[in-house]
Length: 63
Image (cartoon, rainbow, N blue to C red; front, side, top):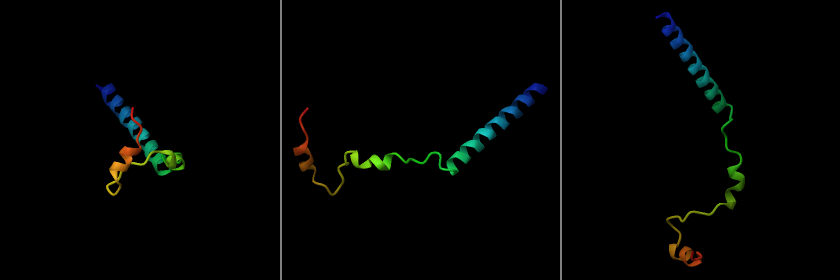
């Protein structure tokens, strides 16, 4: 019975360690996206509510 409590304590400690490492990485900016803003102008624009949808269809090439 003692080993069950020991294993639970070890697993909770490891989970807390991983949670702390994840929170540290988020706060230090490890997950900031620095690549996408540089290439955003290369992506196609979405059709917005103010744009003319018929013009977009006329410029699309048939498949």
